[in-house]
Length: 442
Image (cartoon, rainbow, N blue to C red; front, side):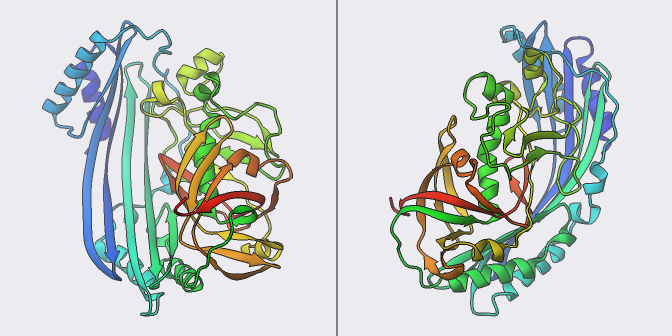
């Protein structure tokens, strides 16, 4: 399908009845699931959709369709026009994105073999993961592949197009009394090593087989990348200019709120990321240094928040951004020079935490989050893992945990992790204190 022609078709249907921006996309999402160490499901979906925004004399409305035939597009336009006519005037409407030219790099992160991967290719990843259990452990999880093309156009003659792909394995190895997770995420299926993910999960599952209870309290911790990615997924809302304007952000520009070892930035054009190089408004996504040496440096903007701030959009608009505001979706936390083993070796008494689960925000201003450990938590004494502990509940300010003097080590094991609407590339961290408030049941 020629997405460019489909976008132009929508604009021709709209004609001069409204300001219009349209995004059209098509792709294939495929999934291979397994349980009890056997594949039980293989599915693939060829998906297509159109997202339309129309503005009539300042009255804006949006609509979408998962069908791109002409009749469906006419219906999409008519229904969105009708909705816009019923809306109040939006005083903050910033206007359409003007024509812009820029270099796109997304083809460097697109792989046709991943986009169109056959079930046998995913099955090999699954087999490698399962075999790592050496017939002793039960495994369950999935291997997924996806690829998509996307095109944006508006009736100011602005155009943007790109493509991307992704692959993932996310699964557990299980003993009768414990389990542990192995995961990998990458732009290409060829970069996914099911055997390595399975071996790590198997090793941790065996080590966690005889877990014991420990007393809640404040412990030094080594957090593995999945935990650090969870932290960034919450922290990123503080860099949202709308959140900041409404007084809900933890960020204070130019304030040293985090440890000097912490650098955080957003850059979709980094080859380690996944996605296309323009946002929901068609604006080119710019690299944004958010935290440098612990100091908050910048917010992210869409056209709406940029208008209010008297600046330019940084290319971080998302669908529905008039409600949610702009979102950084290609985050990086700078890695360090210590191996995970070296991080553990420096801990006198603390915990190695491999995964968080069911995390929920309690206070956006202080970033106090509650959640549970999962898939392997281990006691560390005098630099060595001495045993597994049962899952714990924590209630912890993520900002405080990363505060000045609290980051004792940064790992050299940075990995790409999938989060809502984007990715985070993060290492393990050794932190001075983490507040565990009870067992998994309370």
